[in-house]
Image (cartoon, rainbow, N blue to C red; front, side, top):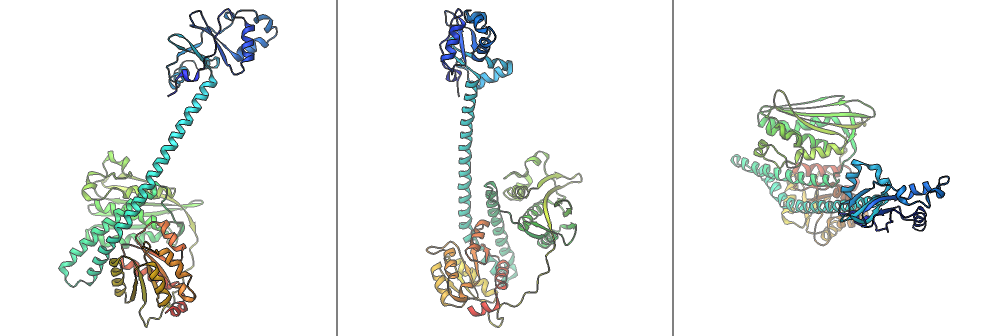
Length: 527
């Protein structure tokens, strides 16, 4: 903290009987002196002479003749602002600004034990305030950098933990899913369902923690792709109908707007918001969950409004204001399970889209969550042409599995067998390059993090092979779920990404997708 003594230099004071000519000489030879204190024999201040006021007086007509020989006691300011040197600049400014701010224009006198110790000016106060502001700004910037570093460190930690957890989780969930599909003993199916459902909960918590971390670092990526808005409701209906029937709920899903309305937006993130809200409503509803979405036309954007209602207990009034903060849950929510991250992520996504989200209690009971986002309307794209065959269906696909983890290779091999494919394996990137150059493969499933040559480097080397082998479709099979990483994989030459833990349907769809974009002649030439 800065004291007045720190900013008020000791400038020799004058006695009341000093003449104006002497004061004029002082100001003339001391250009940086803004004011001179007047003190008595005991060095107690009795007045102050401010530079500008004095020079104006002397410059007036006959001013020098009138005042140069008179003592300063005749025209000095006899009621100067006086403050003790131990007072802080902030305290002094606050008091004077409240009582008599204009007095600071004349300067002020600083004392120590009642005796003159220095003289200050408005300029010295401004300089002190600027220095203090600079120090505060520097401290704030240092705090910001420290906070950013902490967020980045937490993000890196979560990313590493995500990879390390997803790898064994892939073995658990994918193996359980395979066994469930091959199970011939009905009494064991509920036990496998429990394994899969519990693993899905763990995976959802992991994804929520990663999304929240990215959002706090402003790293939550949003895509801008053509999106048929009505299809979001179809996705909600297909995903949640069976769950509603299992819980004996009524699920109403409704879209009000043009069925062919296309907008520019992030379909994955909007679906994530809707699924989070619907999943939250399903936890608390008694019998009914209603999901509505409508589109209000406007210029230049459509206002897309989504609303999810339930007939549950609602949100306690004292919790409504904080319901979208991370780790905030009602007592009922803690009993139902969850980490309290879903709504916080919904808010981050909607606000990054330039929209708003809120919650309220319904008069008839239950809660209502509503969001609005502005999205640009687009003309409907032309209908896609029917896909042509891309491979010789008289033989099975032959796929190269590249992964340093034996469990992951077992999972991938078993899933490919379920799809009617054959496979070969490589335990690292270097072996994958050799296999791709010597073998005949319709596709490659490539892990990313491997000792020695990683999946990115292996992909680049495969893309540099001569002939059709350089165009073998490559899917990243990875526990690195960050969208930025996925973009990097595509930039290095991969055709798609399948996230671990592997879901059979996702792997099959990804294989069909990458094979569909390859020319039939290329696939056959590689084979």
